[in-house]
Image (cartoon, rainbow, N blue to C red):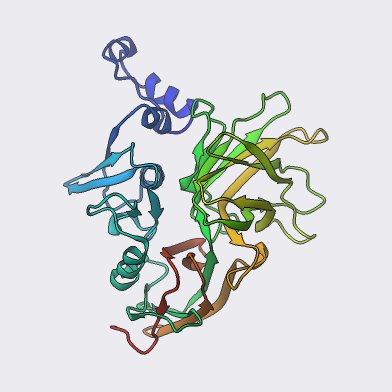
Length: 403
């Protein structure tokens, strides 16, 4: 599990704890164990293989982002995963889709070859060309267009997304495109001190509380007598330039007083640390909801930069909470520049029974660009997504597709 409570509950269920302790087989939290391991074997087993195991999915997502998946084998009643926890430092994650039984994460590393690795261009081409995502019982079947061509000299690109409704009732969905120079999904973040279990990855179940961008998010609670909570961190690799940093977080109205103050720091390769910004997630007077928050500016020299998130309890608040989603970096200048609040382009759509709806997204890219497409059901709080990275500029031809 992820917390002291989960670990202690499992230990207390052992009939003879001393024997397990003597054998060195007491359970440990996943990120504590992974920090000391070169490789990790993960066995996912259960009585009902058709039922979603949320705890296992969170572990798989976190390992996919913080290690390199080398193998996955399914057996009757169990699935076995193998991870390399010491990948080359230049390794980056290109997250393919969020349905773990049907996807294989892909990574890029300039000096590494193998089934899990590919250059940026090849990764993006292959993913968009070959992925067909079945999204479960509530979202139908959807897939990006398979036609991929080089763009014109202006860098214009076009991405059609098709959504088929196989059910006998209409689907009311949101289809969204997010673009950024780089993004860190919540499960790409790690606890700076794994032994401090106040940060915990969770899936919210209420449709109003589910983030339509990422199903799994980090949550924390900080009470009046608690010591300051240790933070979360993740590393971005940005081309030289100036970037706005945005953070997705759950916000309350101005009359509420339950949110923690969030501070984001940038830590350089030489351990220099600077504060990017701090804020309390707050709406403009409407209902509480997930929002993009503009944190501050980061100057990149082309070297990796670690973004570290810490919490503080404002003096006038007794107990505060934080629900954190993904971090994004957006160029300040150029055709890829966008205010953090408009990082996504959304369209509300209705797909009638037995029909296919197509949404065409367009844009202009100069330099690296990350593209995330999300299809979301606001009624049930269910979403599916695919992601990719464009190096330079690629385009999608709406007229050349394989249905």
